[in-house]
Image: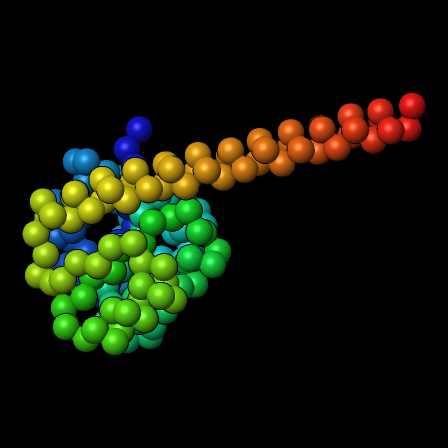
Length: 151
């Protein structure tokens, strides 16, 4: 099954180019507004969000910060055309951005970032499952211990 990538950009040409270049390898969802992207994430199992930094309603880093809080396992990639290091640092810190790529980007380089992001996504889910299993085991051990103390 193909991984699902959501690409958010206010430029329709960028959205169409991205979809045309990536649809053979991934299930591509595109959105031109943060609200549209948010709805798509709620309706689909998205593994990676890629967003442009500069958009009219909300910056890419602001959008990723919101998504990081609600969907911590989804990997986040920020596209930036400007060497504005302050916003890049903010994106990494607040949006928990895993990768940053500058525009114009190379699709081969972006594919590599997506592959790395998918590995991180899988590791994140595995870690979450292991923690859940440990919590269950801990509860079972506590129950057994209480039973032994009572008898």
